[in-house]
Length: 335
Image (cartoon, rainbow, N blue to C red):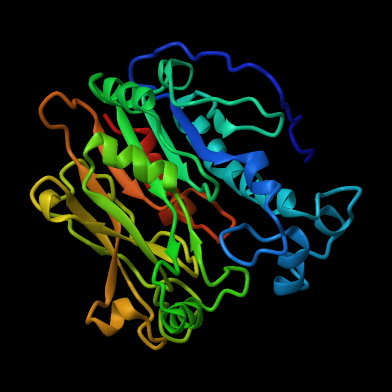
């Protein structure tokens, strides 16, 4: 079966509202050129190059599709293209469920077009996913914050925030070394602090959650399958996790810490067991699970739902199964 024809550099065509068919959009908070053009002599706070990916994961990416420079970019751009490649299954599942295509917007795209979070992104969306994958200096403006606040005042909307991990926040180099030893991913530098834009958006919206650390999830004994989630079924009154037992394995998942002011408004729906065989400051403090899925039901003027879940949950780059796709369908079919 042939791959479908691919398009790029086209203006978005707004999707009409159809009752019962949610319009899902993805917004990536990075500047694509800002990430791709980072200095490769600097070790921290950048993405890997495709050459580094191939070396670390050899021979997984040695087919001509990925290794041939005439076929696939070998710098940081190649690594970023892997993300797009791995989001395709999520887009397909949502389109099959809703009947609407899933556009993927970038804050600054490959051609240098800047697109803040404004009506061009928000007007025809019912569910918006914001993937906090920026390492460059992107900050949410006051206009963006107000636009998203207005979006959430619409009945039936849902905002899903996915700030990625925050590895190496400590100034203590020994602590950073412990974090690196814990997650065990040679492609992650000793400091990789994602999601400055998404964190600023969350602060502006009054969402009392912070992404912290990059924690390796536990697996089922004797296998390489991620351990099941600890689900708070009594809190999940909307059924976000109905039929869901696991997400997908990723070597460095963020812990979504709930601030003191959010103890009543934020529901921790799912926690992920952590691999405690590898020391980490978080587990040495007595923690055995990370907060994996948070929900803020509508409140006050905010008529929409807010979910916090890592962006890797919507990618097949790190695996996927029926449980994961069930979670996607739950989001797509939320009333």
